[in-house]
Image (spheres, helix red, strand yellow):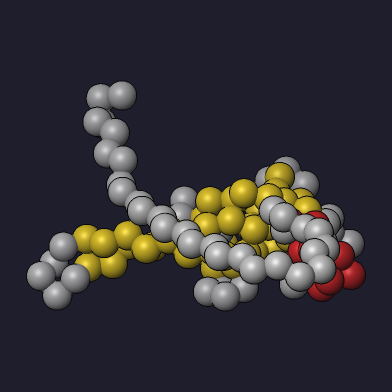
Length: 105
């Protein structure tokens, strides 16, 4: 997508972040899922940077939370380096909750 946008003459970049999605359980309870995700953005004159989520075929929206925007995907890695031999353990836990803001604000 980025290559196509650039070929068409648009400035384009790679964006990495999270995608939050809401779904309902069988009991009707809302659950939020949060996954690592990536999308492309193009700079459109008069509109600014506009995100294109090629996974869903949609424009990016409020559930897309960007963490890094770079010209190339390899520049978005949070950690880089080289090690000879090592043993590593990596554990991640993520929780999401909807923040409700009163309408009067």
